[in-house]
Length: 507
Image (cartoon, rainbow, N blue to C red; front, side):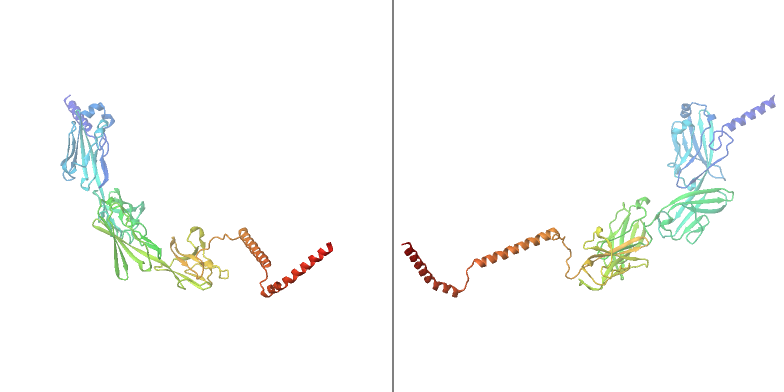
């Protein structure tokens, strides 16, 4: 009986020992060792929970009489454990000084038998083997979790400046030999080229552009076929828009030169921002300062009136913290040169030549007649009205063989490229002796006929009145008046003689 009792005793002891240890994160034995990978700078959760078979105590009793201690082993050479976090059943917490602000357990999860350790943020030196000892009532359980850390870094550190050499590095705490490193940009495998040079666990980008911003993922494959990957959101501090912007403006108009950063400086924790503009023209350097505004990322240069002398290259330089980013902007000015200076005589032969100070070779020119006033409702493709019915060709030069008053007004020369309309300039054509604007004709139709009829009647009345007046007036001849005066007495004698004859007859 004694040998049998000894065997039973040893069996009971082994069962009790196995029941008191929970392999990685699980409640019962038989689970394989668990490993958790986390990227440096992110958070990691080391799992530890009781199995349902161990949850035979009431929830209140489990919560009130539970304590947990998380320890970290020093390494494979020595297994000296260091306390990371201890939570007593009274609620008192003790944490190692290097990890004190970064480690925690969730008290509310204790009732569910969850004692996972959270590390936020994870550092590369946090890699190693962690073990948790959970005590509830008279029971003791343990969890073992290995934490592996993968690190993705940029050199120089953030913020990454556009066109400055950049090195992306990727490594991990895995013990095996590194066999292969692959990089993915926005989900697409990055091939090795002059733009991207692959090194041992790193990727070199000699001149990073704004198109290189976005999600980068490194994938590490080791000799034991372990594959580990991590992602990095790469932000490049540069400028919005094309790499070499060109602004087109008509002579005499305003021009706005853009200078907009790709990100707000405050996104990098930087509040000190200064910006200034330079203009390189004929060896003379002109400079404009832009007021500081850390809450904005746009620093445009506004030129109220530009001419051919303002054309050329401008440089916008923005200092963000200790780093400076700059971009060159080219201003191209559109001008119109007439073959005849000043007002043009009607019937003259006129050439209007449209010029661009900085042509790229792909520009197209188009002329439009805006009329006496540049209103959009009067837009019409320019057609010479006196070129024997021929339509003018699209090009730099507009030819008018015989200038007429129909050609007077504003002409527009617009410059077009593959991306659309680039800029335009207006030219006012003045003709000698012509009115600037024709008032609306109100003396036409029935009104004109009525006015003419009224004038004709008035004229007829005046003629008749003059004729009657001339007829009623005595003749103005002195000789005739004398003759009448002489013959007047004789007539009187004849009238008296006749009266006497009448009287004698009556008697």
